[in-house]
Image 1 (tube, one colour):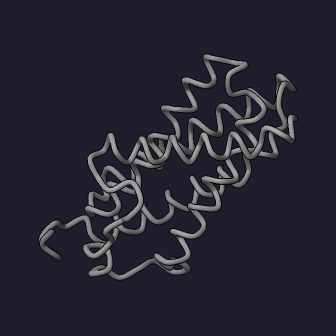
Image 2 (image 1 turned 90 degrees about the vertical axis):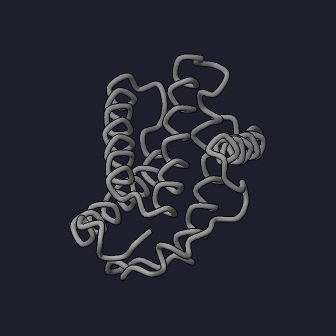
Length: 159
C-alpha cells in the first residue's frame, strides 16, 4: 500500500463525491434534510452523526483507493459507479424516497460483499480496508429497511 498516496486519493474521493452531488442536481456541500426530520428516526440513528461519519468515510476512502485506483481501470470504473450509488442514497434519503434508498443500499452492500470475496480469494488487496465501507452500507440498509417498513404508506406525511 502506498501510504504517500492516501491523502491524494482522499482528495480524489472528495472530488468524486462533490461531482456526484452536482450530477444529481443538488448542492454539493449542503444536504437539506428537513423532510426526513418530519419522520421518526430508527434506533441508534442521529442525522448529525450520520453526516459526520459519512464525511469521515469519504476521507477514509483514500486508503482503499490508494491500492487500486489508476492501476486497475476496470475496478476504478466499478468503484466510481459504486461510490455514485452511495452518494445517490443520500439524495433519495433527503427527498424521502425510501424505496429507492432500500434498492441503492442493498445494491451497494451486495456489490461490496462480492468484491470483498473476490479480493479475499485473489489476495491482491487487503480485504480489511473495506470493512468500514461495508459497515456503512449495512447501516444505510438498516435505515432504509426501517423507513421502508415504517412509512410504506405514502399518505402518512405528504412530501
